[in-house]
Amino acid sequence: MKIGIACYPTYGGSGVLATELGLALAEEGHEIHFLAYEAPIRLTSFSRQVFYHQVSVQEYPLFKYPPYALALATKLAEVCELHDLDLIHVHYAVPHLVSALLARDMLRGICDVKVIGTLHGTDITIVGNDPAYRRVTRHAIEEADGITAVSEYLRRETRTIIGTSAAIEVISNFVDLQRFAVTPCPQAMGMRHDGESMLVHISNFRPVKRVLDLIEAMAILGAQRKVRLLMVGDGPDRPAAEARARQLGIADRVDFLGSQDAIEKILTCADLFVLPSLYESFGLAALEAMACGVPVLASDAGGLPEVIDDGRSGRLFPVGDVEALAAAAAEMLEHDERRRAMAQEARRQAEARFSLKRILPLYEDYYRRVLDGGAKAQREAGM
Ligand code: GMT
Image (cartoon, rainbow, N blue to C red; front, side, top):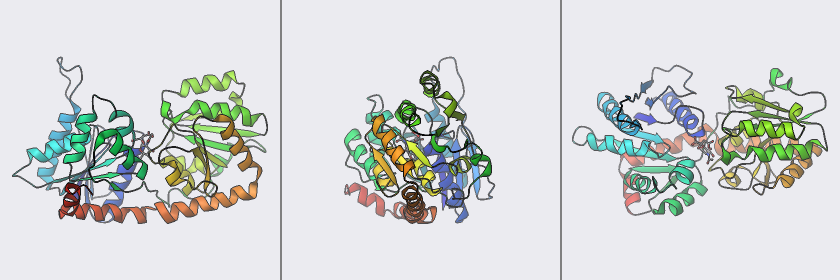
């Protein structure tokens, strides 16, 4: 198949997933055309089946808000026509799905391209939930030829928030088990000071990640045992988290590493991965930790319980309950053997449920159903 993929190119789960999916599809022999305002961050390997088309938006004095959605629609139509694409797969509904529908309309009578959108989370729960975008998001979801969501939770939320009964296929996030493996990295192991346990958190430090909860819990935990916390990533709440760590007198045990590419190496030195988010539609970072054989301590919210098997591959705690977070961490660090069993189970579940090998054919199968019209009939029947 010839597939156009539009996504956000910088840090963020949806762009990572879109890029990994495109590269894996190319390995299977499909021709992939990425479209974005910058080259996607994980587009690091070369394949002759993979192309990148930059979407440029012209500045103009009248434009307080340059219309990226229109520039993307135009570029999508151009690329579809020139390369005879079979389908456009956009990641993150706003505005990509609307641009793709516009491109499909512009191509009517020229080429018959189908549009699939993958919903990732905040495109529905935050952006799509905003009255400024809700109606257009509903229209785009209902008019697309196929829609997927990354968890059952997100499918339910989409129905409720957007107010649609359109058929949505659930296809989980996946992980590359070769890259995210259980091989210790000596450099990362060197981050541990003697006798310390190691907690790791990776995110874009947006308010939804609740990184300050982790700092509070770390102060409780640090009073009981020798422990270090690696904070990986960057974003709006980083300065507040750094300031709070200083205020609580634990700054010497919390390392803020900023954005890092080789997260698979950092993860191998972790005893626990902590994700205290308000919610996650899926929690790709948690899955990547599991694949590295690291048990996850996460909030019992959103799609996280679909990924973390509470008590087997990690532990769940109520959102915002820093005492419960600290207590669960202390218990897991205390019982080394139980934690090692969880670590093994985490890797086993990543392999059994979320491997690229398992998820990729689900996307390919869905593409075929959309192309032969089967998914459309199902959508119209509201199934
Ligand atoms: O919030 C983020 O971390 C970025 C965001 C995105 O769309 O770029 O991530 C969402 O998509 C990921 C990939 O499908 C999911 O694993 C994340 O759980 C989801 N984030 C939220 O729902 C908050």
